Length: 57
Image 1 (cartoon, rainbow, N blue to C red):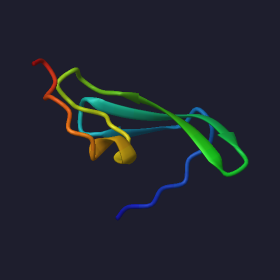
Image 2 (image 1 turned 120 degrees about the vertical axis):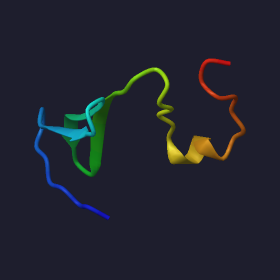
Image 3 (image 1 turned 180 degrees about the vertical axis):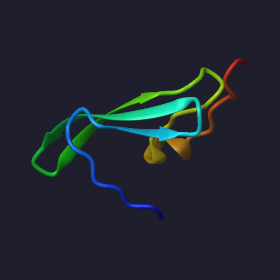
Image 4 (image 1 turned 45 degrees about the vertical axis):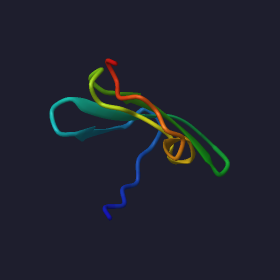
């Protein structure tokens, strides 16, 4: 696992098409903005356990 430190407004890129931005840090919570192509599913872990149809279906 790669662990990175970022400040507000700083970004992390995954490959050429996914960008994660630190939108806000408040106490022990971090708000992230994620830009990804429509064919990439972005799902919170607790919701991933719920059966979901694939994107585009």
